[in-house]
Image (cartoon, rainbow, N blue to C red):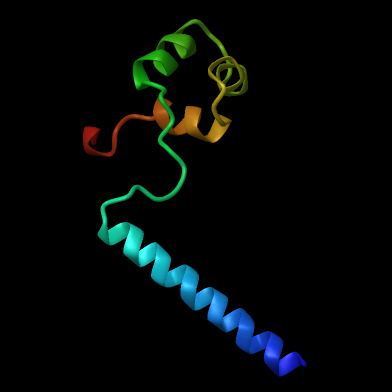
Amino acid sequence: MAAIGQFERALIADRIRSGLRRAEALGKRLGRPPAPTRREEVLALREEGLSYRVIARRLRISAALVYRLARPPPDAG
């Protein structure tokens, strides 16, 4: 029974991978949609003195995303 279960799990995983490849080939977007937050909003709220956590709650995004948006862009040196 265990061998049959492993075989079935492998079949399911293979079907999922092929489905993802097909969706990608058709140009479908995979994963979570991007957060509709602009960097300017985060920077303006930081200038008001709000913490990353408060900004995250207000904009309904994660604190990690707030922190990432508040940092200077990588090409800014």
